Length: 178
Image 1: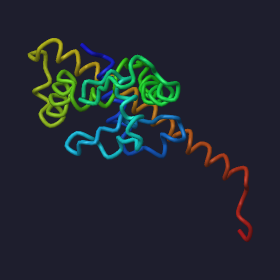
Image 2 (image 1 turned 45 degrees about the horizontal axis):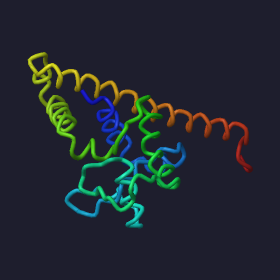
Image 3 (image 1 turned 90 degrees about the horizontal axis):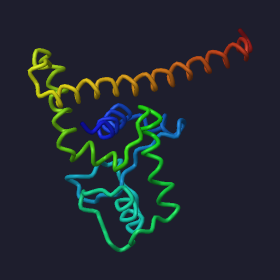
């Protein structure tokens, strides 16, 4: 079971739509810049083609973006850029992936199977039972736990924001004229 890929999937899927909150927490999931619209997510782009290739190479991503142009070098700016999504998964789940988090969500056959059955099980709970292959069942249980970790992170983030706003209002006292 590829736990890192499932952690990546949970992190990306449960964080989607919270880009502004991500800026406040240092969490970001930009991708390598795949340009095929059938593959690429709108949030997944970087404008500089050479940098895209470097990022794909650093991730060792089999999405088709692999390029021999850069040899084995990992320019420091590429390493820094690539570490952001990898560290984001670690911050949310405690697991740091070794490869591209987007590849895990979009192409990894095991992750796709787990996500498919997990999503079916939401609508058809009787499907979620021990009759599944053990590895798929274990993957679903692991993925559900990873989702809970990500949701807990964002719940705590939201609660902290509410506490800060409440404290600020309390410290500022009543509005003039009240």
